Length: 166
Image (cartoon, rainbow, N blue to C red; front, side, top):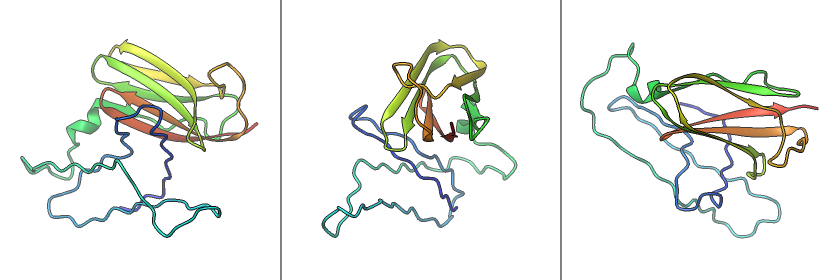
């Protein structure tokens, strides 16, 4: 699998927790590799790059799943791509949760700083929409740029990359 997505996670916002970037269900016996890459700025010194707090989880195969079936974990949170994207003045993320749960949205700028937050405690199962108008926590309009909308629903995480163009 080749993924060219880039994620910036600011771990100082919620220390001691892991942020899920991707969940991959690989068939038994498949060969795969994980590539971790860090962007090194011109002012950086040294010859080593360190990644910390990375967790890879492995589960045992309990049954064979045919190619036409869906993994149950994917059915708990269904998310449509943000639309419109690029956007001005607002974009929407349509999502569906299968059980009543807390849903939290964080929006990060391309530097990894949280710029917006929305919480929906005890949201009932069903289809819902998150609308974002490119405003920060104080209601100020943000500059044009790339933003990451992070949806947390229970233990599931979805990240949408959006471009705001004034």
